[in-house]
Amino acid sequence: MFFGLLLSAGAAFLLLSNTSALTFVLGNDVVYYGLVLFELALVLGLAGLSKRLPYALVALMFIVYSITTGLTLSVIVLAYTLTSIAVVFVIAAGIFAAMSLYGFVTKRDLSGVGMVLFMLLIGIVLAGIVNFFLNSSLVSFITSVIGVIVFTGLTAYDVQRIKKIGESADFSGEDLNKLAVRGALSLYLDFINLFLDLLNLFGKRRN
Image (cartoon, rainbow, N blue to C red):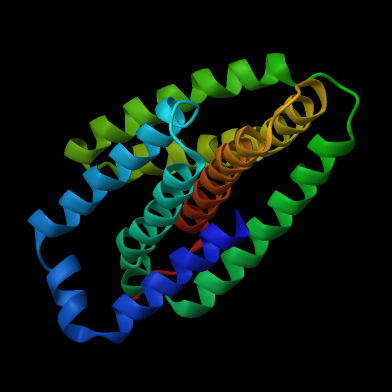
């Protein structure tokens, strides 16, 4: 997961450091939304096909997904001040670390909570699609508040789920490696979405 975040940060930094590349990616709707669709296809492919694909391909898809996410999310550096991005990142990292620890050590079964959070997540996604056309600041605020709650809870749930799978199943070397990638993807998505929702709530936009 941290390797994926480093790849995303590196890709964003390289893009922002090259004016021509930045203009090509962020200044062209076809290119930008093409990357977003490619990013979506990769995450759906990883979620649905990783068990049947060889580990090398699964790992490559995760690497490409992390880099693509870094390219698409580099736009936040243009929208928010670097100070607010750094502060929100630290807050998100603290929440993520605390909930990861809770999910790892708690004896409480979080599967029921996970189902509720997943249903809320579906609602957030649908609301986000609708708000793409409405562009309502109120809807954006509400979905971000709910998103913080959802991804905070999902962090603990996913850590516990990954722990249980690892403890209860007998995996070969390749299957274990693919499980690690799928787990990394889940936690990567939890952290990125938690960070983005917090940034939407507390980030300071550039004038």
